[in-house]
Length: 152
Image 1 (cartoon, rainbow, N blue to C red):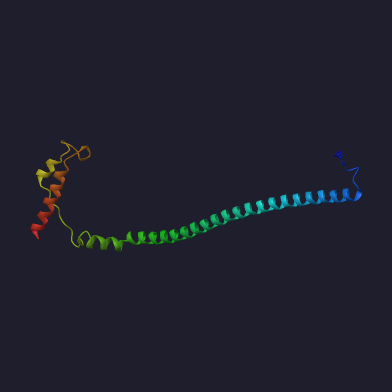
Image 2: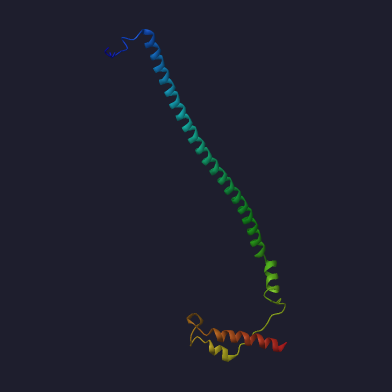
């Protein structure tokens, strides 16, 4: 007995098998295309989800920054009000009397300058702007204020 090999082609097959195989091939192609489209749709939806998440995080950070700006604007208004209050005449007077120990000038004070102090800062020598003798001027004012205290 000899083995016979048969080569069948679509033309040799019965028409019922050809139709079933054709349907099966079209069905497999349809399932493949559908699976491919489903995978692409899932990938696009996942990308949109990531993009939306990034957008929401940015929006949240923006709202945090806007609330910080509002708080800082309120603080700026308070600081401007405090600055205006501190520069007011009443506050300057309180600071002068309390912190600096200044006294109210109810009566005028005469300052007596001795001739030795005038010669110490005379224009013939150095001027104050050219590095004059500040120590002599300080001494002059100290002596004048102590002379006033001795008289009272």
